[in-house]
Length: 160
Ligand code: A4P
Ligand code: MG
Image (cartoon, rainbow, N blue to C red; front, side, top):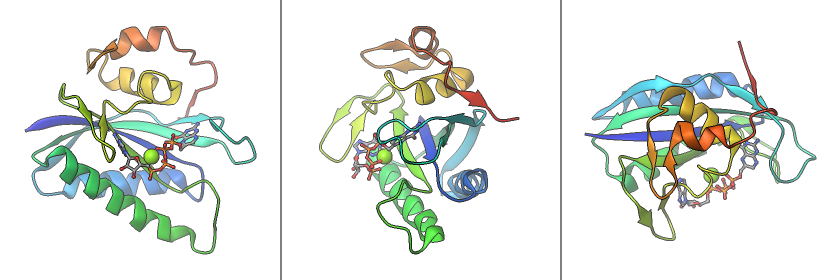
């Protein structure tokens, strides 16, 4: 069994409901158990500013799926959630799922990079990760809590 960390993001529709649904689906995958989920954080968009604020969270999933099987499953779930917002194009998405960490593995393939290249740079990833797994190792960058301590969290607002 591997321990993986998944980043959840979204800024369209009822994002909290989309996250809850996605987490329940992940917990139901064969050989997979949802172990922890961070709080959900509201924060301004990274990139183009003419879009709504994002919600972001991080989940720990223990799984027998291989990294590529897990990526396939996450992309299937993104597509299923994407259908909720029929008719919207060129907009921010309702659900973005990133495979952040998979044990202490390093993978550098076009389809899959682990650790996800944004983990150590994005406040909306590293702070929720450090909340549920301060000791998690981001290969090449150190422990989550230490990275988070150097990353500005002032734009993150935890939802109640
Ligand atoms: N891919 C490679 N490695 C991974 C991995 N570890 N996990 C490939 C997931 N996917 C990985 O992703 C593009 C390709 O990355 C996939 O085909 C996969 O094989 P995508 O999800 O299809 O496209 P994307 O999300 O639009 O691209 P990208 O580069 O992941 O976008 P970002 O950088 O995630 O931008 N602002 C805030 N505050 N919060 C957010 O969550 N998200 C975005 C999306 C923009 N601004 C944001 C947020
Ligand atoms: Mg993505």
